Length: 251
Image 1: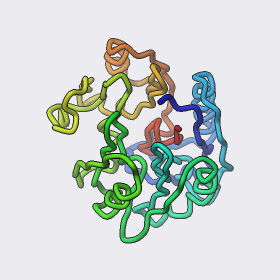
Image 2 (image 1 turned 120 degrees about the vertical axis):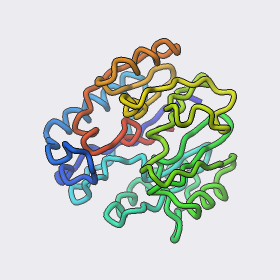
Image 3 (image 1 turned 90 degrees about the vertical axis):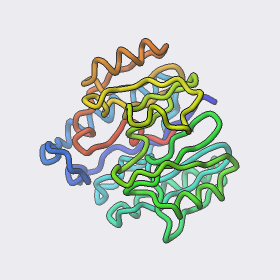
Image 4 (image 1 turned 180 degrees about the horizontal axis):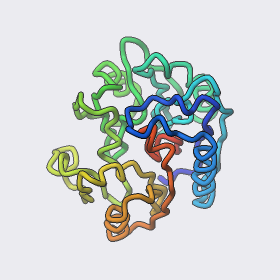
């Protein structure tokens, strides 16, 4: 089912203090980030999505990455519990907004789970057990959703969705590391080389994929797979190691 709405939040004043180990993380430019976010939102609107805009949270640097705050599927939403203490407190108004559209439950300690770890496939959700999501978080998601929830464990990564992304039309973009994974059987795979793996941080909307403008090969293979591509400069979000999906919750 095609998304009709997108929850977004523009970066707040403290955005340059985002959590990152990117070598250029110290060069994040707040003004450029705001302009790039504006173009991102314009692209969503041009693709027919209604934007539900949350107010900036100036004291929480990573609060524009709203995707991590919740997992939505069908008629239900799970408000997540962040792994990092510094990100807790982002989700209050997200939960309030979601309650207008979904039955909502909140993840509880000792579980941790973040939306960036949950890949939505046609017949299941695949949740990463990573640096940010633990087994208890997966179990809470599984117990709440009326849909199969399976998991992939990789403690070396931050979020699974940075490595596996469902584009639609039975097609997944991923790396060679997951090429033969049994949970991706019977799906068409677009394999991205390691030097362009960051391009997997893209955002599919219907038959269009919004992608970083830095990765020409990745854009070409996504076009060859039958999708339209919108190319955006998202440099100030890449410096915070964030993906295009991080900036919205689609439903």
